[in-house]
Length: 264
Ligand SMILES: [Zn+2]
Image (cartoon, rainbow, N blue to C red; front, side):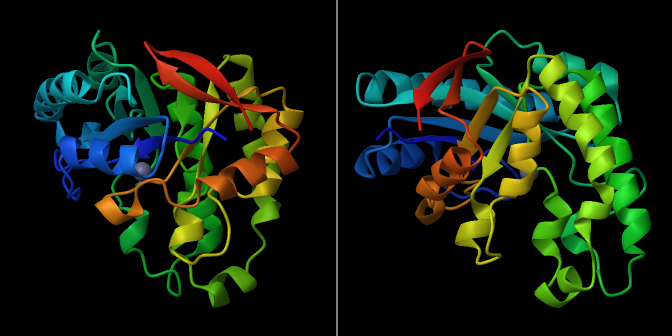
C-alpha cells in the first residue's frame, strides 16, 4: 500500500512547526511515498503571502536534492478565502513553481476563523448557509485543484452541538457545489485531522465523499493537515478506507498541477 500525505504545513505557515527538511525526514521514516507541503496563503493577509511561497520554493528544492528517489515532494499551497480577493488568489496560484493548490474556506467575510467561534452562541443555520455560500464562490473562482476539508466548521463543534444539529439539512446546497467541482474536473480532499484529533470522522465524512462520487467526481487527495511533526501521515489508512467505502478505486497525488493516481 502506498500512502501520500497531500496536506502538511511547515514552519513557513503561521502556525506550522516543522521545517520542510524535518517533514521529509519524518515522511521517509514512516514509509510514505510522497508529501505535499501546503503552507497557508490567506488572501485576506495581502501580498505578503507571496513571500511565504518564495521561502517554500527554496526549501522544497533543497529537500528534493536531499530526498530525491526516496520521496516525492510536491510544492503546494493552501489558499485561504480565495473568493475574498480574486485577483490576489489568481496571482498566488498562477506561480509556475506550484504543483498543487488546496482551496479552503476558514472564515466568512467580516468574521473570525471558524476555529474561534463559540458554537453554543452562534446561529448555526446562518453559519452553515454562510459557509456554503462562500464555498460556492471559492469553487466558482477556480483557483484550486482540490477543495480543502469540506465542513471544516463541524470539526470545531462539540459532540453535544453536533447532536442537536442536522448537517444533512444543508446537503442540497453542498450537492450543487460538489457537482460544480466535478464538472470543472477538480477534486476534494479527505482530511484525516478529524480522526487523529478524536472528532471521530474524516473531514468531510464518508457521506459527503459518496455524494462527490455520485456527482461524477473522480479526483480525491488524502492529507493529515499536520502542523507538527508527530501528526504527519497520521490516519491516512482511515482516508483510504473512506475512499473504498465510497466506491473509489484510486486516489490522487498532484505534481505540476496534474493528478497522478494510486490504488486505494
Ligand atoms: Zn485549512
